[in-house]
Length: 398
Ligand code: PMP
Ligand code: GLU
Image 1 (cartoon, rainbow, N blue to C red):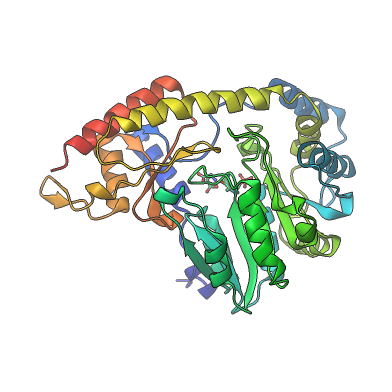
Image 2: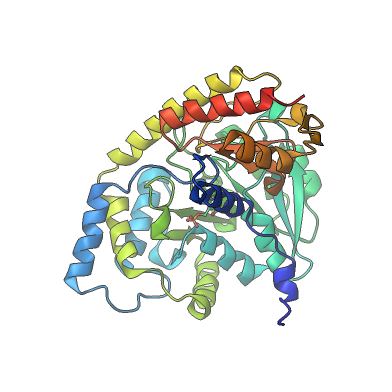
C-alpha cells in the first residue's frame, strides 16, 4: 500500500469540510439536520451574474484555456473594484486570479515560505491558514485572543510574536470565525509595530469585506507604508454568493504576483473561464444584491444573538461582520450525557449534531478550543429552530 507523503501527514483535514460531510451523512440517513457548519451564503448567485455566464458559454469565446493569472478584462475589473471600494491603486500586473481565495493563499505560502520560516496567525483563525503553512514546512506562531476582548490581538502581542524568522502575518477582517473587524485605529497600531520590522509582510484576507455591519471596510494596505508589504486576498464566494464558482484573487507588488503566476502555471493553470467572465459582471455590475444580502445577514445576526442570550452560560462577542457566531461554550465541558462526559468542543459539536441535529464546527480547528462556530447563513426559520434545539440539547447535560 502507498504511504502518504510527509507533506500530507503534516496537515489535518479541514474541520469545516469534515463537519459538513458528517452532517450530510446524517441527513442522508433521513435525519432532519439543520446545517450551520459550512460557511457559505444560503442565497443564490444574483441573476445578472448567472446571465453573464450563460452568455459567455453561448458566445463560444470561453471554450479554451484561460490566461494563467486571469483574463485582462477581469484583472482590470479587479483594479477598478480596488479603486472604487478600497481607494487603492493597482495595475493588472499586480493581480492573480485563482480557483478560490483558498488557492490564492496557497499560492502565496508555497511561493514564499521556506522550512523554518514563521507565520504569525492570530487565533481564532480560519482553519486553512496553519495547515497551508505546515504544508510548506514552515511554522505557525499563534497569538491567542479571547471573547472578552472581542477576539482581537493587540499591537503589544504582535510585537512580542515577531522574530527575525517571521515572514508573514495573516488574518481575516471581518474575521472567520469570530466576526471581529479591526478598526482603522487598531490597524494603525499594528502598522506602527510593522514599520519597525520591515521584513514582515502582511497577508490581509478580505473575503468578507462586503459583509460588514460597522461602516466602510478598512484594509491595512491603505496605510502608505504598508502598500508594498501587503498582499490582499479576496474572492467572489461570500459577498456575491458565488462559493461554487471558485474565483478568488490576490493583489500584491508585481514581483509577488509574478511568482504566484509561475506556481499556478504548474498546478492548476488559469481559473474557470466562464466563471471569470461572470466575475467581471459581478464586480462592475449592480452591487445592490450584495448590499441586500449584507442587510439580511445583519438581521439574522441580531436574531441569533437574541436567541443565544436565552441559553445560560454562554459568552459571545457581537460580530461586526461575516456570518458566524463563535460562542464560548466551555461552561458545558465536563458535563455528562448518557454516562459519557463532554470533554471538549469536539465532543460538544458531535453531541449537538447527534442529539440536537444541528451541525456546527468545533472551535478546536480554529485555534479556540473553548468555542463552537455556528454559521447564520441560513433562513430565519431554520435559525430559530436550530437554536431552540441547541438550547434543549445543552439543558439535557448534567
Ligand atoms: N478565507 C476565509 C477567511 C474564508 O472563510 C474562506 C472560506 N470560504 C476562504 C478564505 C476561501 O474562500 P474560497 O471559497 O474563495 O476559496
Ligand atoms: N470557508 C468556509 C468555512 O469556513 C468554507 C469551508 C472551507 O473552505 O473551509 O466554512
